[in-house]
Image (cartoon, rainbow over all chains, first blue to last red; front, side):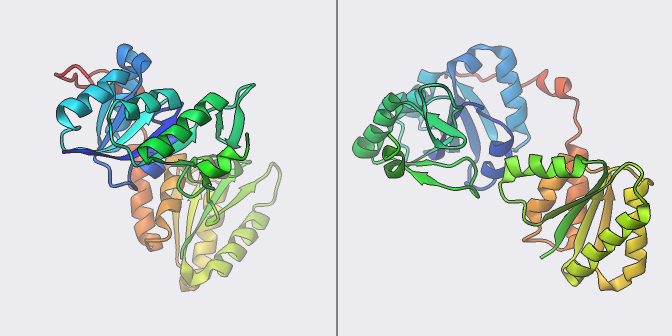
Length: 163
Length: 143
């Protein structure tokens, strides 16, 4: 039976920070990207696979519901997984779909008008805040905002105060 | 703990520090210096020497841009001048993967080990991007 050792929402999916500072530090044996757009576009998928291959970790690009089905069918085999999604709402659906996640790292969501910045690298909407609160309250997920392990960490409690 | 010094023609060294901080956050162990247009190489050499003397036995890994050029020459002279007063290594052809690797290793390695690791990583980082994406393996299941 596998497990998710780190779940991260990052609009960039696999990129320099993930490859350099996260891939080696979490004891992971695999990187799973869950994103319909990437899974359905062979070129994007190939780029992600090639980047992941450089980490020596098993890399998979899953559909959004595929991340749930794969868990329910085979519990991610024996992989210790870094699970990446572009958005909070996709991660929310994955957790509600039954994938056990203890820690959720919000690592990269770009600023847009109408979003509230929590840390420099992460801005969220009120609706997304509600999803995160639900994950923390009903699913026991520890939610935190942090771009890379050495940078400042902001808790969900602190994020709530910004709204 | 060893320190890292990047020395380049113009401000590439500062730019690399900026880039490395985006990936790693903390770049406290990274120093930069550069040769500006028309500057006397003796001045650069003096600054590198001061840095190397300050670091001394903790070790200094110097990463320069071009083999045989002024940052290289200045560093080589400093190496010769200081002898065993500074544990120093010099690598040419600095690239960002090399800088990142050096910074990730300086808490754990000696300057010599950092040098070996940096050279391996920097060479490995140079890849034909398109060749690498041509034959990624297809999964047999439908997830």
